[in-house]
Amino acid sequence: IGFRIPAIVYVLSIIAFTLIAASACSASPERAEHRLPNIIIMYADDLGYGDIGAYGATAISTPNIDALAKSGIQFMDAHASAATCTPSRYSLLTGEYAFRRQAQILRGDAPALIRPGQPTLASMLKSRGYTTAVVGKWHLGLGDDNVDWNGPVKPGPLEVGFDYSFLLPATGDRVPTVYVENHHVVGLEADDPLQVSYQEKIGDRPVGYENPDLLRQGADKLHSGSIVNGISRIGYMEGGKAAEWVDEDFPDIFTGKAIDFIRANKEGPFFLYFPFHDPHVPRLPHKRFQGSTQLGARGDAIVQLDWMTGQIVAELRRLGIEEDTLIVFSSDNGPVLNDGYEDRSVELLGDHKPAGPLRGGKYSAFEAGARVPTLLTWPGAVDPAISDALVSQVDFYASFAALVGSELRPTEAIDSENVLDALLGNSRQGRITLFKQSLGPDSLRSARYKYISPVPALSPSLQAIEQKKGVETGQSVEPQLYDLSNDLGERVDIAAEHPEIVEEMQRAIDAIRQR
Ligand code: NG6
Ligand code: CA
Image (tube, rainbow, N blue to C red):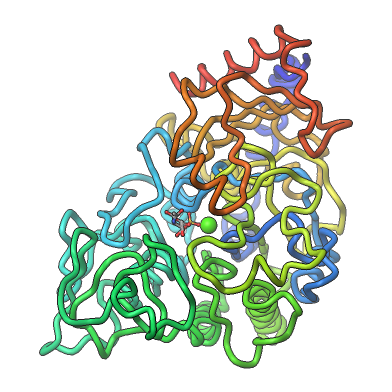
C-alpha cells in the first residue's frame, strides 16, 4: 500500500542530512549561533480542527491566529500524538509516545511524569544555548508522591530543562487552583497551608455536591469537589485561600508572564513553551471577551485565546525580533462541548462545527481526536503555504534538533522523526505512517488510509463518554479502515474489503508498541 520508506529515499535523506549538517558546522560558530531562531510553541487546549477562521469557522472571529496562517504554513493533516492532554504533552516534550510511560490524564496531585534526567525539547534546546521557559498549563505532574505544596514543589519543569516556569499545575477544572512559579505556589500564606486530596473532602471549603446554590455553572459528579471562584472542581483543597486563582484573570496573567520572559531574553535565542488554558473547561473568559460570539463561553474563550496569540506576536514585532522567531501554533487534542460543566456550549452551538469536516472529538480515535489546527511561521525564513504533509507533534523534538544542530543519542526522543523539511515547507513529504493514541483504541494513518485497532471488549467508561459528552470514541471490537482520500469523515468502513491493508497496518502498530 506504499507507506514504507523506500530504501533509496532513506539513503538519500541521510546523505542530504549529512551534507546540511556538515555545511552548518563549517559556518563560523558565531554566525551559526546567531542564526538560531527563537522558538515559541503556542498550545491550545481542546481546540478543534474547525474552531478557527483559517480552518473554516465563521461564527468565531480569530484574526490573530488567522494572520499566522496567512503568513506561514498551514498544515491540513497535522496531529497531536494523542486525543487527551497529558499524553499529547508528554510526547511533544519528550519525543516519545505516552504509552511507553503508561501516561494517562493526570490528577492534580500526580508526581512529575517526566523525571529529572529524561531529555526534553527544552533540555535539548538549552544544551544548544537557548534560554527556556514554560508559561501556562502543565498537566504533567509535579514533585514526588504526596507533594507538599507548602515547600519547594519539585521536581518539575526546572529539573527537566526549563530555566523558568509559571504554571497552572494541572487543568482549570481540578485542584489545586493556584499558580506555581518555579518551585513555589504563588501568594501562599504561611499560616494557611495548602493541602490537596483526591480521595476525600478535607477542610471547610464548600463542595459542589453539597452546595449547588453556590455554583455559577452546574457540574457533573466528578467536577463537584471544592468550590473556588464559584466553580466546583475535581478534587478537594484545604487552606491556601490567599493563593487561589481567579479564572477570568488567566489571559492577562499568562500573557504578561510570557511577555516578561520574551523581553528579558530578546537577545535570544529563547524557547518559550506557551500552553493556553482555553478553550478547556471551566470556560470563564474575562469580562471583555464575554459575549464576543453567539456561542457562549466556549466561543468567547477561543476569542480570548486569539487575543493572547495576538499580544505575543505584537510584542515580538515591537521588539524587532519577529523575523528571528519561529512560532508553532497547535492544540493538544480535539474539541468537546460539555466536558463536565453546564456552560451552555451545547445549547448555543448553532451551525458552528468544532471538528470541521472530521468525525469524533476529544478522547476519540476518529480523526477529530487528534488532527488539530497547526501553523508554523518564521517570517525570516519560511514562505506562506498550505501543506498536506502528514506530521505529528512527536516529531517536533527531532525536527528542531536538526534545526539547531543537536545530534540525538539513540535513547533520546525514540519515537520522533526529523520532518523539518515538511515543517519548514521545503517538502510535501512528512511522515509515511503516523501513530496516534486515544482514550480507547490506537490508530494509524498513512497519507490515504486511516486504520483503527479493534478493542478486545467495549469499555463502559468510553460508552459513558459517548452518551454524556456526545463524542464518538471510535471503539469497536472489529478493525476499522477508512479511505480518507474520498471519505474524510470516516463514514464507510472498508476493512472487510482490504484484509491485507488491515493486517499490515495492525502489524505496524504492534511494531511500534513492541519497540
Ligand atoms: C477528564 C475529565 C474532563 C477533563 C479531562 C482532562 C471526564 C469525566 N472528566 O477526566 O472534564 O478534565 O479529564 O482534559 O472525562 S485534558 O484536555 O486535560 O485531557
Ligand atoms: Ca486537552
